[in-house]
Image 1: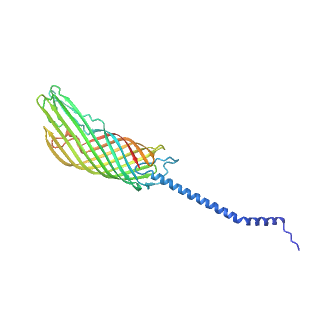
Image 2 (image 1 turned 60 degrees about the horizontal axis):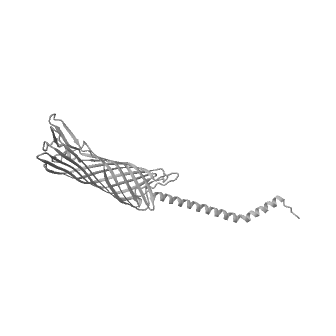
Image 3 (image 1 turned 90 degrees about the vertical axis):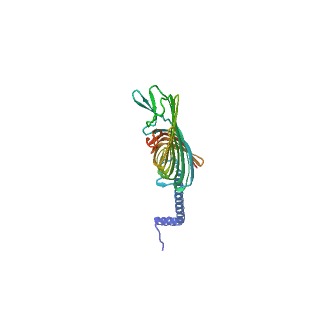
Length: 359
């Protein structure tokens, strides 16, 4: 008996057999493709981790690494930077002009005919003040720093007496009269040290550096008088010396602008000192007094910076406007013989330019 299969069924059986013969090859190809996809995904994850670590490490030691990508603020989280350690340091100069609250008079001219008085003040001018800092920043942005700056401003006023005039000192004392000529000198000296711990936080494009520590400051004000006539010479030297120490805190904020290594920054600092204020007067007037007094200092600064890498070091140039208030000390020309009186403070304002390095 013969059976005849339809031609379509025969062809279907032949195709099915062929497919079954190729099944191991197809399975191997699918497994190979799956393994390749997994390896590519793992490589992409590693590259992303390296990029994130590179961005974080460049934000260390108070310096921001201004990288350039389609989204320069794409770090994605906030917190301390977790990278290596750096030494930081730099130097610069302030350009300060002092201004005393209520003025800093040199002498008074009294017209004996009208009894009118004219105050002649010292003309304070801009003077340079060097500054320097050195520190170390460890893992996670925690570090320590030492800062210093010094300032010395002096002014001189020479006077020749006119007929029917009398020289008086700012507090009303009358030295020798009549006076043919005189010279008046004023000095302001600052010596300031900060020793503090620092902490750097990185949040997207913003870099914040906070500090807390101890400030030591020596403030010296001097007022010297030399008067002369045909028969006599009058001199007096007044000196006020404050030495104090106390806490200081600060906050510095930086933000990059564009992809050219440039940025803006702003900083504020406050200090409260307690120390011994000693008053001395020598010459024709002599006296001595001392007391413990507080001194408060406030500082603010805004400016721009530029940062560039050279090998393993980052060089930072900064320039900005600075203002400082020193409250608690009077001008020596307005102190009486017990060291009382004065205008109780002064302001320093001007510019700062500096260059620093992080390595």
